[in-house]
Amino acid sequence: MSNRRTAFFISDRTGITVEMLGNSLLTQFDVVEFQRVTLPFIDNLEKAQDALNQIKAAHTESGKRPLVFTSLMADDLREEIAKADAMVLDMFERFIVPMEAELKVKSAHAVGRSHSAGNFKDYNQRIEAVNYTMAHDDGMTNRHLDQADLILVGVSRSGKTPTCLYLALQFGIKAANYPLIPEDLEKLKLPPALLPLKHKVWGLTIVPERLQQIRQERKPDSKYAALENCKWEVNTAEILMKNAGISFLNSTTKSIEELATTILHDAQLARRVY
Amino acid sequence: MSNRRTAFFISDRTGITVEMLGNSLLTQFDVVEFQRVTLPFIDNLEKAQDALNQIKAAHTESGKRPLVFTSLMADDLREEIAKADAMVLDMFERFIVPMEAELKVKSAHAVGRSHSAGNFKDYNQRIEAVNYTMAHDDGMTNRHLDQADLILVGVSRSGKTPTCLYLALQFGIKAANYPLIPEDLEKLKLPPALLPLKHKVWGLTIVPERLQQIRQERKPDSKYAALENCKWEVNTAEILMKNAGISFLNSTTKSIEELATTILHDAQLARRVY
Image (tube, rainbow over all chains, first blue to last red; front, side, top):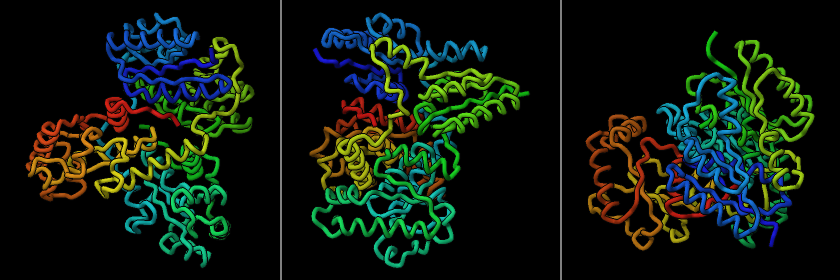
């Protein structure tokens, strides 16, 4: 029998919160191999019974008690899951109960309300940020560039696009991005459109060997992907950004989340929560 | 003095998990007005002391004990925050400690490891999904459409783009989207490129009045935004999708997260966790 255990993430709605919480906790136990199973939309007794059966089956199969992270709000569903011979880590019990005591009010006990559509203004702001970011990807246009909350620069494939999209979707930030192309690099100057906006420009850089690897998958055996060229582009871009007084991050070992939140923090922009 | 309390989300890294968890819990207490403050990258004692001072200041200002959600792993930092006269909801204490007992291993005790760059293969898959989704936004190209994990259709401004981007970024799904334009609607037929791929097509619809409101912000007083036109497009698109046997969701009151996870669930696609 292996050391493998099943970890369930059970929610009455999207499951995003409990999945993220559970996954974050599991990463602290990297000697254990986990099989992760997300069960979203468990919003009636029949589905809860089905979830319970899946927990039992996982237990039988591995011989180990599963871990079960739940964010269910309804008592009858929580009681159903609690029947499992498993370690149930219940967000309700561990957080809502003490919060009720502290706040001296009863919780709404409503099916998960986060990630809900909310009001039209918030929704619009988020969608506007996504649209803006899409329209200003890869230096596509200089129109309304002054409306950007921030502008990311860096050589091609340094991670600008996913970072900007994450900023827009997660935090409602209008994030334009602008490639540093060989002509900019030769002149050692920022693209002219960015000069008056330098205060909102942030940079990404990357280890040349990693850049080569990424570009090689995209355009195999091109000059674009050649290590010599990657080295030149990265080194020159770093000199350019230093000269221009632009702060930059190395994306090589950072996730999209880390890049996005670090820049947001440095730029002192508000984190909206959706 | 108002009923307003401050809620802090304190992390040694991005803060995304603890912010999402805390926000999800706060939505259960909608009679209380919360001022939300995220403090990410609290990774040394000096920063923890600064956080403690912010908690004290919030307490003094509002006269109410703040709520403090923390995901700090280092004991000295957790002890520093615990000095606050506040309700501290510590993920470590509430989850990691019982998990250690259950798993009979010590946790790594390492600074948050979720959302880390992980291995090159996972990273590549996620970035590939983002690139694919960007390249296949709004029916931009039919190239490699067969490689999509799913294809979203719907009238212009029904929510396709943000939903697809969320699927790509959050779950590594290659999500193309294709507008249903007036020519498709007049013929009551899916765009020809989608016919052989119907098994992976999902639809979005929207209440015409909401669509009008959204389009009106984009192109005021156009035929495109006129209520009559919105009604015709929505009704016809729904008939088209029903005829074609395409499942569709109404995006009017659903968040991006709900749309994305519902479609993912219905399509029985794996949820990757990054």
